[in-house]
Amino acid sequence: MASANRHGRRESVAIIGGGVAGLCAGCYAQMNGYKATIFEMHSLPGGVCTAWQRNGYTIDSCVHWLLGSGPASGFHKLWKEVGALRGLTIVDLDEFMRIELKGSPALVFYRDVDRFERHLLELGPEDGKTIRELANAIRRFTRFDMPVDKAPELSSVWDKLVTGACMMPLGPAFIKWRKVTVADFAKRLKSSVLRDAFGALAGEAAGFPMLGLIMMLAWQEAKIAGYPLGGSLPFVRNIEKRFHDLGGQIRYSARVEKILVEARPDGRGDRAIGVRLADGSEHRADVVISAADGRSTIFDLLGGRFVDEEVRKPYEGGMETFPPLLYVSLGIADPLDNVPQASSGISFPLNPSVEIDGKARDRLSMNVYNFDRALAPAGKTVVIVMITAGYDRWKTLSADPARYRAEKGLVGERVLDALEQRLPGIRSKVEMIDVATPTTWERYTGNWRGSYEGWLMTGAFFGSGMKKTLPGLGNFRMVGEWVSPGGGLPPAVSTGRDAIQILCREDGKRFVTSEP
Image: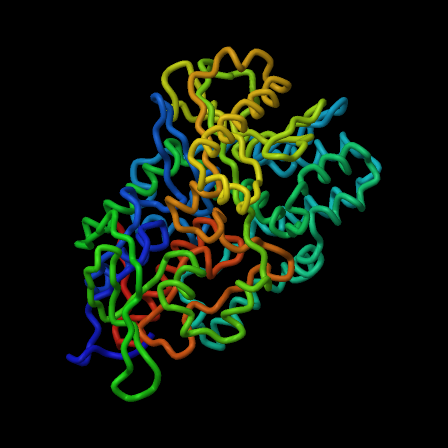
């Protein structure tokens, strides 16, 4: 990223994208004396981490739980620095998620690991050894906190030795569980109830590593991954306010069409010098940071000029993205107090199966927001059903508005048919149905092929990072979920922070942070 402007110092930063990563990068830039301008294509901040209103109901598109919600996590400090948690109430629900089965007790992922272990032993006593190994792994990882204070690129040999020493007690568990997928684990179980439940959990994400699940459950146990009441938009608005208070500028409805580049004066490649917007205006900056999706950044905004095999490979099939979603939201004139409260939702079987989006579905998952009354009018509730979908089909449908609307309507009706099996009588209480498709995500966030969280986490890429710079291009860096397999909010704040920390190091400045 190094290379000074004509005055010998870098002072301004242009940030593409006003999602969480872009907002956080902007906050840290302002904290360290750089003048930051964020260019956001939408009229709201947050990117994928946002919400919208329909008939008095708030549809939340992101936060189910937030790593760093409690002070025992290093991410808590980062969220406080960008002001994200100001005025928010965090709740730690007793249930993380629930897998219901036909004719058998539900598998409940309790936040309390001791309770979860007892529950598993009741459901499958013949799997006692495996259950105890799983519970002990969760307990071990409650003591692990990912180092986030220093950018990995700036870590010294000593830093790496200290991190390694902290990781050493977890080494055996890390090695044991890293390459075991949820689907693999299900096959090991003797209990038909547990085998069916973990098999249902694997679902279409059969390659998800057990280590990822273990860490999520450990965070729940440690009370560092709670839910902020009010959801995504108050959380994002807090960061937006922090950025404004620090003196930063956001330009909304400002789609970037090109990253401006010129040759370096020393002849060693090129450097980014600003952005061109869809309206034709150009905005110069000493540094450009892209928080937009990776493919658009590399191949559209930069024309594919700055790539090598490592950069190109993920986009040519070397990695798998999170599948796009049909996001079906319903406003229900009922508090649904009798439905268990689970932060990551309830998976339930369908019999008979229901055809949705051209595929017979024998199971759906629903998030019932009966624990967040801020999202619905008094006495009412929001229910959200997320269904993986094919991007190409919906891209084709979107070219014919009438057919597109009809297909969305059909999806809503079929989801209601399915929900009737789990919540009898719910159809008569529906006041609002909203269906977002893969092309909705693409239109409002720009994410490649409508993927909502970038690269899918697999055992092969667990804990791995990706290149955040491009070969031959200076004064440029990428941040956010497209450079962090697994995506989510934590890498958004950490990569944004890291980018400015590295910029400060290159400019010979001391990196400083503050809290509002």
